[in-house]
Length: 332
Image (cartoon, rainbow, N blue to C red; front, side):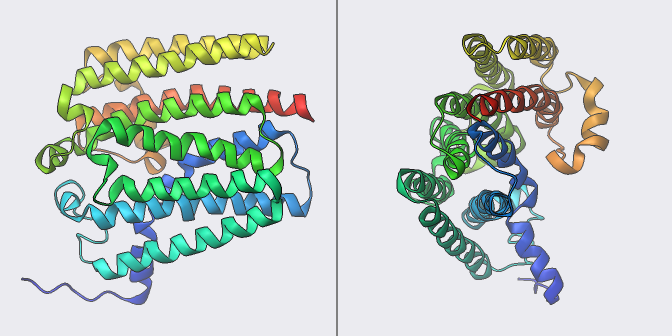
């Protein structure tokens, strides 16, 4: 076997950071921000700003980073096919070093969440710590045998939705106040939106998944039908969101969500008709405006998904933040 070239200390640190996949950290930030805003209880004090910083650190670099590190550790053979430049398959980190990576991150996450839970106290503290521990556990069994939830889309997508879209909202709300009923609805909407997006994100690893026996929806039913299933879920999320806004008495939000719904359907139609090259008019935004944030792909269907994701996320997250602000103002 060819010898792996030795790398310096700085490059080794960069490899450890890459294993935590910083690009993915931002995926939980909107839900965290929404949960805090909807609580209506955060005060402009040094204490509360430090709590907010700890929350983002806990669910970003630690929580999300842990799940990404574990994923790389247990998916080494798949990554040799799908992403050979990642730290472990490229030889920049050994498997032992990767194990230390997620082990240390896990320990820090558990200690920090436990301290915050004790600081909050009571039922809110239990909800906060319990949510984080559930997220870490799901993040581990998502990639680790024998369960390895990612092997089947019927288990993997809900696992991602729970970890990224649901418990993040609850934790952020519990950090500052009792759980608001409206937050449970927003958390549920984010759960299903995350499910739809992870379904389409599997386009990038279709080849490796097929060879490795992973039952992604794309492998089972093809790209076009995968888009259709994801679009149905997304459209139902927008429809329920509009109904909630109306029932809560947020008339302006209702019309904003309805407008977002219509625009989403407008871009879904050409993408369903042509899964590989639909909505190319937003490719410039992917390449230049959002390329570093959401990544790029050589797989045509995945590149099309990234184009859709730019528009969908702007429409959904804007309305979500608007809703959180209106809910929070109600409880202030």
